[in-house]
Length: 164
Image (cartoon, rainbow, N blue to C red; front, side):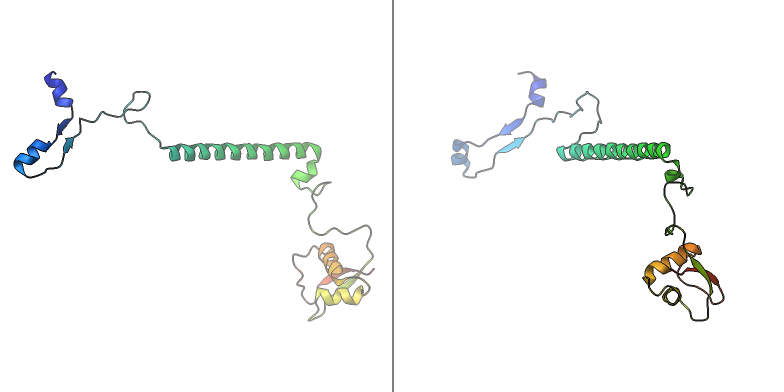
């Protein structure tokens, strides 16, 4: 063997039965590993990223999640584009044939003008002026007819109230 081969070869020292018998002391086997080879990335470059199996799985999952998000966003945009062509008012929200805001009031409604008194509520007004109807639907119509933000009213306000 050459000296270079001896320098890189592992050094192993073993105790034999004869040496134990001569000295009377047993020493453990000592193994000194050979010089470790440098690990390189598959392309031969040094310092590359080496991922474990778990790391590769997580990276794959992240890429698939990002791709699914992009696909979902694309489908939403496609749906909005088709909706804009088919029903322009539905996307723009201009009150056309599409989405309507607030409660809808059916056909022509017979109304009366009522001045709100102190302590009056929409519920009381609905039960007084349309006793045969469900007060909830009457309150919804009063809110829609008068473009109210809430069901709270102030004394002295004039409201349109459906009577039938």
